[in-house]
Image 1 (cartoon, each protein chain N blue to C red):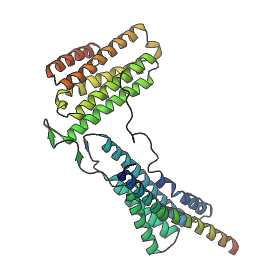
Image 2 (cartoon, one colour):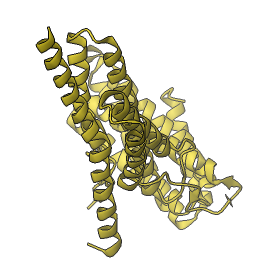
Image 3 (cartoon, rainbow over the protein chains, first blue to last red):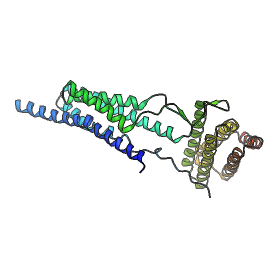
Image 4 (cartoon, rainbow over the protein chains, first blue to last red):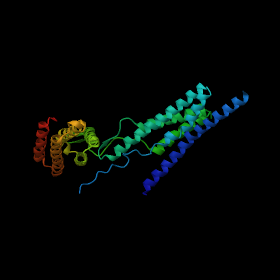
Length: 45
Length: 278
């Protein structure tokens, strides 16, 4: 692997990691939020 | 032995860009849960986030495809619409909105998520290609845009010949048409390597390729019952003429022999006229 290809791969991996943090984590948090809200509504009911 | 045409890397359907489709998947469950719980505000918020993120993903894929095409060609003009940049903005908006409205992590954290998504998209997929490459501003009176347009049009015609070859069930004809398409690609490559050939090859690009494509499609569209030995013989002869003309054209272009090229073009033009193709 050439140096520029290695650099590109690292850049892409960093980008992918940032995307996981920026999109994946909030999406999972939203899912958990929804489940918690449903559970608390059911408990209150 | 003829050189086998290899599809350029990146011209297939790579997995590049798929991550942007996968990451928002938990939001589908959020939307379903909101729908089943009758929470319309949350449902709309989830659909908006999904819409932004998946539209961004689709735009990004389209931008990656355009970029691969730009890199593949020796002469190319960058796409006018900066699709990857637009995709990054949409993904950032979707990520920010999803963090704010669905994960409810606050305005500042949501803004940080949006910025991270923007940077992440640019780092992972790169920026849009810019400008032109591979040709001077004007070659033989043609601008780079005109050269690229002519080559793209020619490639579309070659693809149409390959499509017809796929539809034809007679193995011999199908293979010969694929070989013709291969020859045509070689001629296009010669023009791409030296765009000054474009003026000399204009008849090839318009008469030959159109003729070959129309003949192939006409045969492919002929109903089974209409096919007989006479039609097949005629088509076989026609393919022979096209094959020799294509090979001649490439040889003449390489030799820069204008006179012989025009004579050869006339031979095929006469034949195509006789067959009622042009």
